Image (cartoon, rainbow, N blue to C red; front, side, top):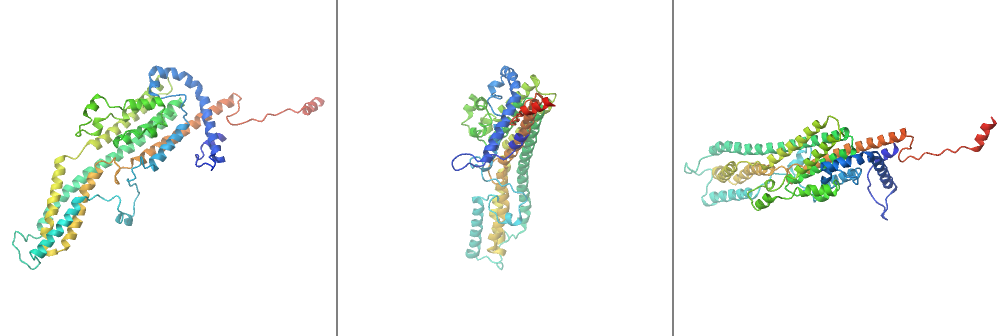
Length: 452
């Protein structure tokens, strides 16, 4: 069908100087309107019978399905969300680094993405310089000077202590990297579950409105997880284009703090997630309500158990990410490691100043860069859901999931429109957007037949 092929074309990209659309953009808008009209014609009888059941089940109060909501416009809304997350500074932190296999030169000479050093690193450099200056210029310590045994200890104690210290630092870094990896694996499972649910809803659900609602709320779920993990309220301007006013009010109404949350809001010892209601939970309620409604009105075959399994996966992955975010390294371990690093780095110049002189400052600078950098890097990646350079690019993950759901929903809408064309063809009506030429019978042709 020509109008369906046109609907797969590029979106509106520009306007003419006078504010009007170009010919290609006008053609695109017309094609999208034809697709929407074809879907509306096919879905009109089903919508009329489904609204009564929906109202009885309470889904109407959730704002899940609405005959005024254009399912075709949801595709443009999803494209809008992708563009905002990728290019709008308001949502994109602009700090995360997501590069595949960077080269040596790029990693050696880059500044962004390196482990933070902090003031303690520069304090150690200044301290080592002061120790060298004191021993060299005040005590006149040189390699030829014989010192007391308790002062001239050599480098053996440094080697013995450094082995245990590096073990402590590497163990802490490895522990935090495991949390980072668990968070990445959880996002991968969320991506797979959302894609599977979108495919199952668009294939197994007979009602296009229900399938479109599942796809829309899957995108809302992913966005709510993103904002929830970053301890931010759900952005209304991102999700308002995907929800009806009733649906948006339902989510925000159930996100309001209860009396308990209000009482503990000022307690700084409690985490953000403990003091606030889990934002993605109401979205999962709505998704399960759509599935329950489809089962009761027999709009789906015996496939709802598979979809429920994927809903459980989304819930488990959310719990996994919350566990990664809320589980901290024991405080005693952090204090022990940092005390050991501080004392060791403070004592290095005393062991190296006699034989190495001012080169001691270079040794201390490099060693502190390694040890203090690893400790600070562990602190940075301990929360992989932020906007630091080494955190997970969650905005990119949301865009990938939204793009896949958008493509799946698009294919379902095309199939629904094709089904409407097939029905019209069987009834002898013209296809949508196709004008049949009327054939007039020439009188002279009739006269000729009469003569024959």
